Amino acid sequence: MSTGHEHTVKAFDQDIGQLRGLISQMGGLAEQAIHDAMTALQRGDLALAKEVRRKDKQIDAIEAELEKLVVRVIALRAPMADDLREVIAALKIAAVVERIGDYAKNIAKRVPMIHAVGEERIEALSLLPAMAQMASDMVHDVLDAFSARDAETAAAICERDNALDDFYDSIFRTLVTFMVENPRTISQVAHLLFVAKNIERIGDHATNVAEMVYFAATGRYLAERDAGEPGAN
Amino acid sequence: MSTGHEHTVKAFDQDIGQLRGLISQMGGLAEQAIHDAMTALQRGDLALAKEVRRKDKQIDAIEAELEKLVVRVIALRAPMADDLREVIAALKIAAVVERIGDYAKNIAKRVPMIHAVGEERIEALSLLPAMAQMASDMVHDVLDAFSARDAETAAAICERDNALDDFYDSIFRTLVTFMVENPRTISQVAHLLFVAKNIERIGDHATNVAEMVYFAATGRYLAERDAGEPGAN
Image (cartoon, rainbow over all chains, first blue to last red; front, side):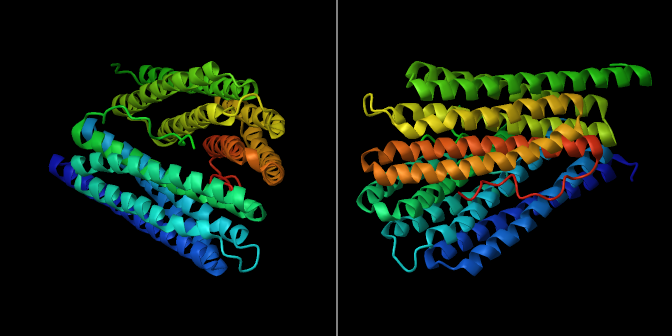
């Protein structure tokens, strides 16, 4: 495409900019999906829940586009060392954001099951929006940190995941107690357990991204943490 | 490293062979982890459960090694088109196998919680080993299909995932019924719900790999399926 070194560098920067732009788009859609899924859950809004599931295909499509771009960038620019690492990081981060979208979609899929029994109010539901907001904020902030190559913000997000895990543990116990006291709603509350788990996993994935951002920015690993696996509760 | 084209091709084939070897090692460890986690769960064997958690670090280490190799292969060999796609596929498949190991580890982590209340027998436990065996066989066969570039076996694995999902749905209902009838064990059975979910997710991930293998071998996508997201139950 170009012969001069400067041209190649410029073209590569544009490519990286485009990769970042795609990830940022995916992140925006994932945040929106979390928000809409929780709204649908709160209101028992089945149409909105369906909309979340439909829109997830957009996130998947952008990921596919990004993958093609990565292959093209590597083939055309043959990036070395740090540049190559950044391209590979973009590929990995996109895969994680895609999964965050899947968790939001999964919450949306559970809305009809949770609201199956008429208008009966499940008290336990009121605990989840604050937890979802925490997770969604982590996703937002980690993608900002990625754009800004901000290692310190990335490290702070890992700390916030500990608070989210504690929140989850407390909700898990509350939901189990609720089941014991309201055996008629066990099936719905079991779905709420999975919703809480999905939110907790969104936080884990934001943390995974934070670790990648930290590594990409500093070349060092954040102290070995036990994140990135499904939490034990 | 070499100048002749033939030398470069040979070196690349060796690299690919090494990538496949690493993935195969990861797969073997992941299968073993599923098996050991389920044995620990059946027997309430806390030491074995701990061993599964400890060994998961080996899978993570091989994935890290594979990532470094991918970066080195791309930088040194500058593979084009199909070769590059194959290297990227290896990177993605390794990430999925790593997550399969995480699900097994997560099952192991729940063993102490499920066996918390003395020797009381939770009947519902007896349903899970057959389901885990199905998922583990899918992992085994999809990695064989990857080694053999066998598109037909890969496609068949996607079919088997439907049977696994049905199995999961049935176990979900059984566990909820069990909770209703045995409110004292709700907390433990809630953990079993997550174990069943983890197994179902292992099947989803095997299916994701099958789709990648199919695409790598044929250049075509398997008919758009709704896999790769956390199932709705």
